[in-house]
Length: 250
Image 1 (tube, helix red, strand yellow):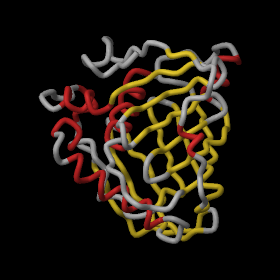
Image 2 (tube, one colour):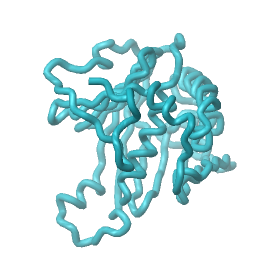
Image 3 (cartoon, rainbow, N blue to C red):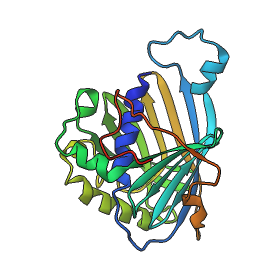
Image 4 (cartoon, helix red, strand yellow):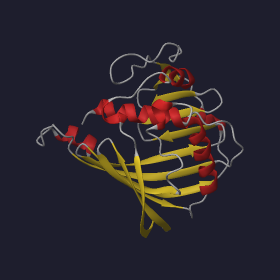
């Protein structure tokens, strides 16, 4: 798999998401089960088991969302986004290290740039009439075409906290309009519902993420702070090169 493309796409999505201004919404907590299967394109199928296991596994992702910050976490990593300072932190929970990026500086740097290659293609979102019940929620299927692949998004309006989630998306859409380089990659305003299940097949690896639990509850601010003892590391962005000048803070 061309890992740099995958990471770069995630980086751009994070830039968009962390641009949301402070809004008075309720706190949300949800868990999802992510199943990954396959072998990355171009890699031999007879690779050692420990390597194959990295692409064929099931893990739980936990998500925390407030009006001032968000946190997405697996057993090994976590990403914290501070909406007030527009800083993103990526934590390695095993090695107890983290990286730090000033997302506002990154966005300013991108205003005069063009995204090239597969990432330059506009995202196509198609709503279908196909519906079914998933994890107890009635969902509608959306097809999303990006980077030459089509993914399936099953969305529901019946999920707890759906209205809060949609408010974030509305704010996101306004931000994207100001950044042409990101506008072509935007799904904001095109997906109507909370993602109950998503299936993404990219370069031979298929990932299916299914919502397993969600609730509105008060979240501790400690979740969005760097734990004591964690060491700051230099971050090198994929696609070659360092973050834009001023983006990385030490």
